[in-house]
Length: 367
Image (cartoon, rainbow, N blue to C red; front, side, top):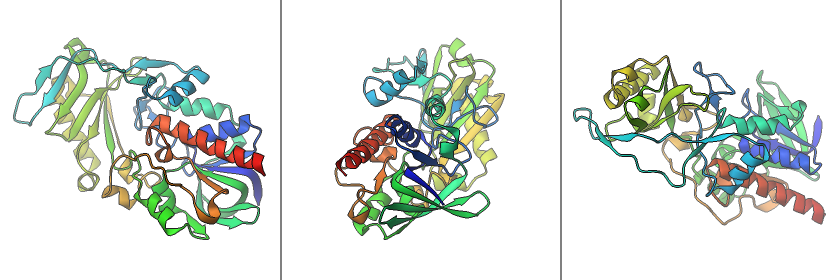
């Protein structure tokens, strides 16, 4: 049995930020992550789909410094390099597969969307470098939490199915509330209204899928196109230039087909349909990428639950408490969806983590 001042559940942006902030305050914390990698929904991958330090963002891609100061401050704190999302050139609009796509002058986005050099995962890598390697426990699922007189007892399970016990004075759950409610058993149980609130909070990215076509050059730019497209025909509804800061060329699109419809076809069939669409929009060169990637977050059990397939949406700011009853004071929620500003976004993850750590430190100071 191991014991820590704080256990942080989830090694996404929020969890790693919380652990970093706790360490800066002299607090002993353990980060527990079910995946084999850090980052959670922040996932920058190479052309083979493996984590990469110069990857394509299969999860969130953008942030807006003027509107999201928490994320801007993190970028500045770790001296991360950012660049403006490419938008020079015309935008393509498609009404149907039988109608020729139309080209329109691009409207300058203000404020511009920003991306991180090395992918969004550059932020989680920067945070992880500040933590001791043995303070992050990968391939470990939290199965249950029991409220004790001196804190919380966590039942965890490793990749081999073996269970262990970890004690913590406090737990910061840096996961989407819906995922917490669906996968972790609490003793005593959470109050009905609290559990219902968690269950009713949409998990951002959970119902969505992104398709990437990777090329040897950004040929659309030479044709006067920005790489941005909107389509009613599908299967992709919204498409953008995904070329990295280092110049690795790609287009990506958000799949407009619902999760249940996607599940009815093979991944290969969906990829082919996306390439056919890209050819309609950007010409014959789009049909021959050097590689393709498809990330369907709806089939990722460490992101989505069955509820996400039928109750999609974006989380909204809520004023009522995320933790109530006997658990108040021993458990904090820090998933991006719980943020008082920009819930669901990268900046929301940072803000939610800041709030959870601040609340914990304040309560410790009052004891």
